[in-house]
Length: 95
Image (cartoon, rainbow, N blue to C red; front, side, top):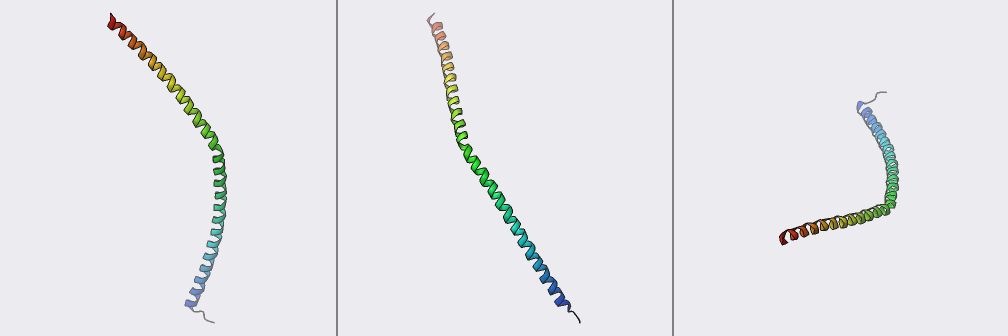
């Protein structure tokens, strides 16, 4: 019983191809499971972030109101200082 080298290499090639297909299939199944888990986590984070959008809008509106209030105070202080300086200059010009 003599085995031809060509037939031997063909058998080895087919065995390695079968092993490669099996390992690739197993790896793809694991990758698909992992991607499904990651997708579920991303969906969970997305829903939690969307729940916080109302809070972020409320904080944004509050800071806008505080900024408007502080702008009014700064403007009134600046107008008061200008009024005092202009009044003093008018007093200096009259004398």
